[in-house]
Figure (cartoon, rainbow, N blue to C red):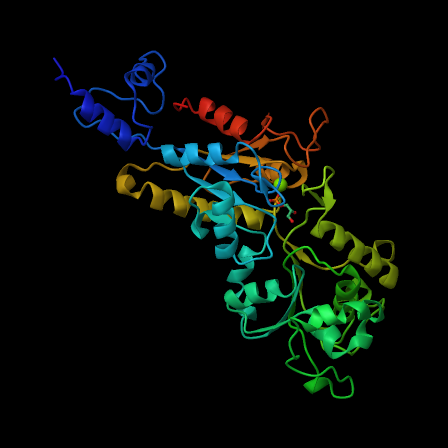
Length: 412
Ligand code: G3P
Ligand code: MG
């Protein structure tokens, strides 16, 4: 006859399952032999700890916050998961601040402890691009030059912004003269002059990164266009190969011009305003329009060669999954030897084009099933048919968590 285990040790066991200290009622609920919840006890003297084989990836804008305001049940959702030691990461197409600063902000707003090991912004993967850390890059977007400072904290040594170029050469873009006093407050001297008469000593850009939503589309479009039409990224020069029909892409971007990276494809996003606002994707579409007008565009066999990351793109999900797996291991490590592989990740988002398409199309190398859950607190509007079908559509983030843990038969 199995020895009766005194209630306290059961509750201790319960605490090992990090379920809130059980009241007898909930213990009774949990110990229903018919449908043993995943976190079930059995009379073994030291029942194995039950470790969640599922986790969450939460989008931020439109799921946890609207611009800077926390959404009503965001705190409840995240603090419940933390009480259960169910791993989650925050996976956003936003950015513009260093991860540690943004995490501090969000932790205060959502009143839950967060850290950078569970946090992925649109530009976070750029930190791994070591090949440009000792070269000259141009960083575009964001408030003032905050994105430059983020890039510097990633280890990029020479970072130029369009504002630096305008401050040094106001004629580069005649239509932001009224903004010069603004740019002068944070712009820096250029590492080299723009001098087409001496290309070898003129400012040369080795890569262009759009880190966050540009604030001055006119200036940023002009300067990026100048770099892409230049000879080898040397500002003030014009490549002789442009328009050469004998060359691929009609000679455009065929003369050692730098690569162009975008961190976030979102055309629309959910901000404070009641209707979605244009995002970094809107800027890219505008730039592509100017590029097409200048080069003849696709109907002339010319494309804008670029690298776009951010949800729904695979590199961002690979990066995020690595972070989640490592975070889960650290969170549950005391049971490392019993930690089985991650079976499911619930990708909770408000934007069908990024969160849902990304979750649906991500084929995990670990065989983990990414389950897309669409909420109605952001871009997606209740009653409309989303362009990409989620596994589940719910009201808000707490509904998403409740539904998911129900799927997992985990005590709510
Ligand atoms: O600029 C941010 C926006 O594009 C969306 O952010 O958190 O909804 O992925 P998020
Ligand atoms: Mg969103």
